[in-house]
Image (spheres, rainbow, N blue to C red):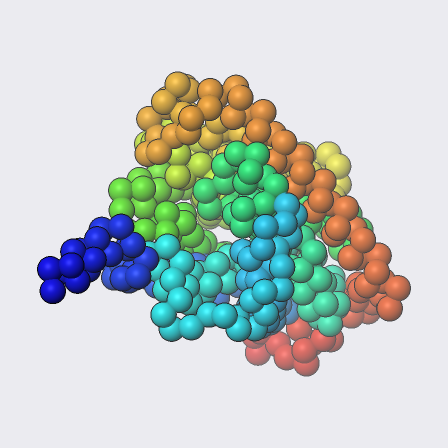
Length: 425
């Protein structure tokens, strides 16, 4: 009996996996975060984008966001999770978990039920191609959009996710991307820029203004994004702990400073502060803090927020006014530039040795050495995204035009593609 008791005690202390259980606190928080991140797409992003387009295209944007959420959910369960988080490949995973065949009720991922981790990551996979919608709003065929989103998710998002978060090439290099500066924002930003250039401008883009049709909807959608982003960033701690608390705090600080900075610049330049400006600045602040939210502290977040509001403001002016690129809803200058800026800035303000370095976790490298690692990550992700996006578009064009006809664009996508109207006026 004595020997059996000794064996039992030893097994508790030295073989803990035999008795591993999910942490209820961590599980509850990530369940909540999962709902918050899905809330960002449906209805947050859908309303934000829907309000920014013209009246005749509002339903098309809502439909695109809704359809992408459904399509990517199915693809994620079928093969996406496996390719992103299974296998030891440098650039992509394997097919060992097709249809989640090896995942059961008792499967664990760290301190979470694996089903919770899978669903949490699914919401990231959903919002990334949904963000790209803003680049081709008002001029892409719905069927082509569906095919493009699935192909882009498969050949752009999944390799990026595996390389950074799935133990692939960039993870082994030491690239830090806490919640998606590269995986989400750089990929959607660069992909948006490529598709905006490829499709060409909307009819009348250079000749007439195309103001948002519903600024109230924009404000409501932006507010939902702000709330949902707490799940996006604080949830990426994958635990209910101090790191999640710090991530939530710095996320809010950066959003507020990004909004105020954009508003101030706009106010000084035009003499008016607008709801579109303050809401866009808020999104810029959120996108920029995303990769750094696990390493920076409050002071660093304040600096990042100010830089986000100013850099992304002038990036927007540069893309549309100077280069004349019709990135309809400013996906590249806000998300792409913001995400890349955050990836760079975390090197400088995320380490105890760096400027304003009072982050929650920090990293072991010096700011300069970490910056070089981060720059390699930017180069790899942006190059891969740009090339893959272009190839996807060329292949889709082989089977037919992906852009609506001039007549359909003039009539509006709501009626021409969906036989519905957003408003009965």
